[in-house]
Length: 360
Image (cartoon, rainbow, N blue to C red; front, side, top):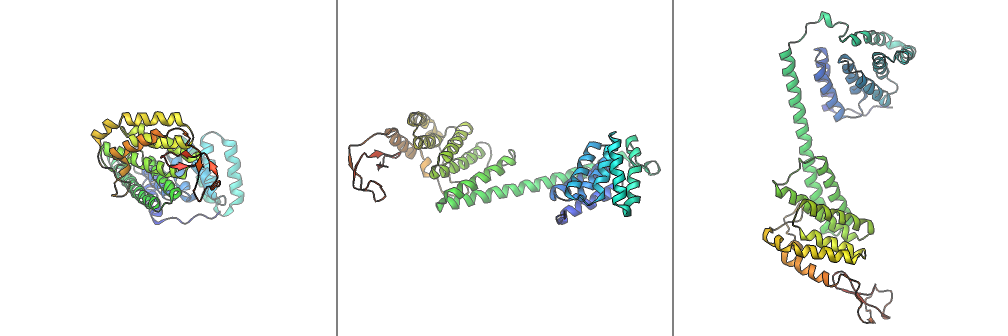
């Protein structure tokens, strides 16, 4: 299996790890190799380097794990098998370790000297120091702590950079979804809003487009926009997903009568008229509180206000929909819709969710 090309940043992290290994600062080296793995998860060399550091730090289970990952990524290399067998030996699984070591000597005769050298160091790892440690000057504790602080700072900078990239990705996805919604591409718009919500969830509370209640409102508006796109699609699965999103809004951001109106529209499409009636009643109940705290809200990622969330518009829509929250029949009449399968035939005409005449 060929190893994927390693990025320059990952290679730089590995070089820093090698430098720390030479200076016997294994904690810092492990951090460097871990950063290299995060940047390039399929780099078998970084796993092999980190496994060796784990052995030096007497973290044998971690060494076995990294050795095994090396083997999976590069079955033709000896380093993974060597560190894997050393870890097993240190964990007292010596029969299996010796079998692997014998196979290594047979299959890699050119690297036998290095393999034997690593094997001889196993007993030193068990005692808690490496072969040449007694002959080397130890670093001062203060110096080690300072270096560790430097590594922690660089780690925090890398984390902050990744968070910033995710935040910019959220903004791009929301703007993309808004454009797709304007073009009437409801499926893609719903998917883009969903992707932005996944990234927001991955940020674990770090995402904010405002402070306090404004951040919660922004999240509620993304849920609302996605729910409306799913409502437009109209399939049963989409309607149930929309109901769940409206439920999230009710739980996180209150009062929000638009969520009750949206839920009622979904329920009516699902022929659950009694539940729709209840949602409309609850929405009208909290409308008084909503009027007092109302501020203009825009579609996510745009400066376009959401007119349908204005108190007067909401009240009219809910009262109008409430009048037709059942499958009321009109007198028999002739349907003149050009799309009607029973064109020009006498048929029962029903009122749809917004009171429009329809026989189908």
